[in-house]
Length: 280
Image (cartoon, rainbow, N blue to C red; front, side, top):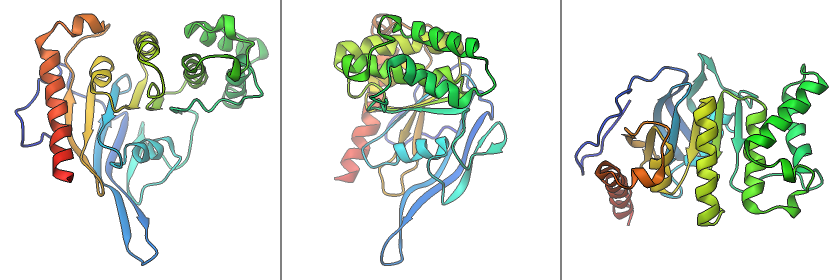
């Protein structure tokens, strides 16, 4: 369902706006109990449907429940009410068909780059042969241009390289849904731009569902099919879903020459500014 806020005119609609029920978030509520017996509602009535090869970004101010929503989809947290279903099956716990990439890498420092990826492959692809596992690890090292650093330890590589290890590790398990919580947020601008392009190249080749949290409107417009814009917390929900009409593959320089890019950018920024002002 696409909802629009009242402060601005509707943005352009993606020509392929019919999305399958591959991943369905329905009437989701998340509340935490308070010591006085009342509840603190973080998410209230979230509804979202995502296609099996769709790239979704989630934006909103801090405290609006973006990470909580992602954790519930990952099975790392549970909803108070409502449901999340993947291919018709309700998500109640973590599963190998859903993999997370975090902002702060989460690599094991005593393992090499290759071993960090291999550990995930061993855990998830238990029936694969040793030769198959070696091939999968090498394929994903090559995919993120890390073969030359395969035998280095995390403290011997840069932040951008660490995040590429995290992405390769997640993808090597062949998930149906890739969940990314501000994956580029800790990187410098140049590294961030290169890694955004690399992730898009991988996604354009493999086309699984992606849910990505970001605070960067330009990043969301560059990478996403739709941008889910959250209202402020507490009791946050989806305020609007912005359709991004640009076809893939995309190139940021070409996008920035299109007037529609700035119309969408201004629409998203106005939404965020409107909700920031409301919260003051």
